[in-house]
Image (cartoon, rainbow, N blue to C red; front, side, top):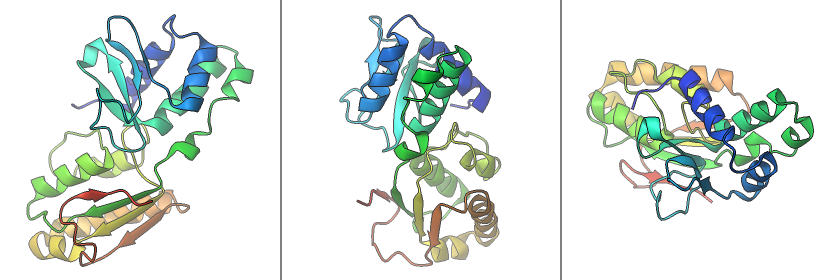
Length: 212
């Protein structure tokens, strides 16, 4: 699904302004990471661990809305940012200050192994699926902008990318493009760690491992 950051803002604000739950409940649910949904099941928020949305990545929430079918997976950071702004706009500064600090809910670590990505489409698919990128453009176009916006991605505090030697061997020009994207990301977020490995010492192949 292709969706813009502004559309995600609209979706979140529409969800938050419903009459259920009351604003105090929104803050309490966010603090305890408890989901909620209306009686029709077409509007609300779900957290990871729910049997209904077992495919959510760590650090994501599922936002229900009838316009987008089943649900849209976005980062919890974006959800909490929207909630703080929503409450502030309504003059509820005291409640806004009780919303959990969004950065505290960013997922800690992610190991991303690209050693199986022998085509551009495989590489883009792996980046999209494992980084939670909401971008459906062709090739690498737009991925950098998506990674820089929490509304369009689910980036971790610490990212380890393995298998870059494999990508360079099969896709040298695309590998250079990806390295430029990573450099821009590092520059934008110097407090986050990105480690690049040519080989794949974890032996995970083209998969994702959550580090604890």
